[in-house]
Length: 69
Image 1 (cartoon, helix red, strand yellow):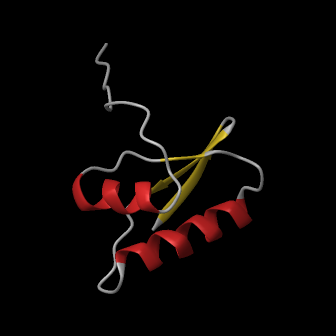
Image 2: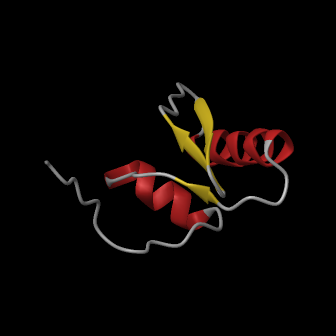
C-alpha cells in the first residue's frame, strides 16, 4: 500500500494482498486515516478493488480523467 497527502486529500494506492481483500481495505483505510487524520481518502480503483472499496465505505465519484498538456 502507498499513501500520500496532496493538499486537502490523502491518497491510497497500490493496495495488494494475498488474503481477504475487504480486510486489506479496512486495514489500509485505518492506516491512512491515522496518518492523515480528518482528510478524505481518494483512490482510482477499478474491478474487484473498486468493488471492495465500495463495500468498505468509499463512494465512486466518477471516471478517472488524465489531462495531457
